Amino acid sequence: VNYASINYFSYSQKEDLLGVDYEKVSNIILRLEDMFNIKFTATDLTRLTIKYSLAISRMMDGKFVDMKESTLKDLQELSKYEKIVEVVKAIEAEFDIAIPVEEVGYLFGITIVSKTHFDDIDWNINEKMLVINKIVTQEIIELTKESYHISDEESFYNGLIHHLKSVT
Image (tube, rainbow, N blue to C red):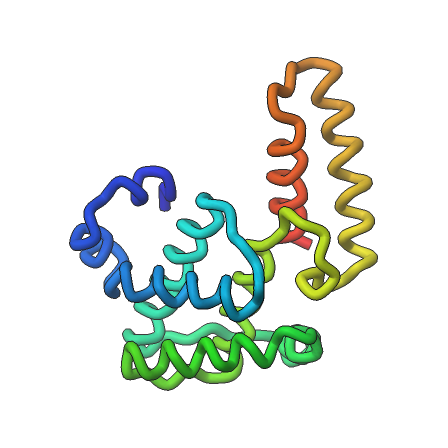
């Protein structure tokens, strides 16, 4: 999905593409910001709204994710997990669907990886991996600078951390 292109569609076009009311999902994501006391970047907000829209649409079609029990347990042990349960209750009411616990974990996981631009221990699944990712990110930046000019090193750094966190 090309997130930048989707951002320019009208709400009705987004609904046709995503299968749910984009504005309703966007309001849920804004509620996430309030509940978790965080602020998503505009890009993260759009991406997360699209990811939630696709997940809700998929669940409305009766298709659900599988998740390793150990992964779900790790997510459930994070201090902010209970807040996502409240958000899921709102989603269930808004879209008249029942959301299984694995999907709660999935939604929490995609929310966590969308919020990587500030050092917040509660958002980091594994603090050791974050430290490793920061080291790797800095090494990638140094290697890149040998051959390319980086006009906005902070954005480049945040993007790399975001990417590495989503795949580790």
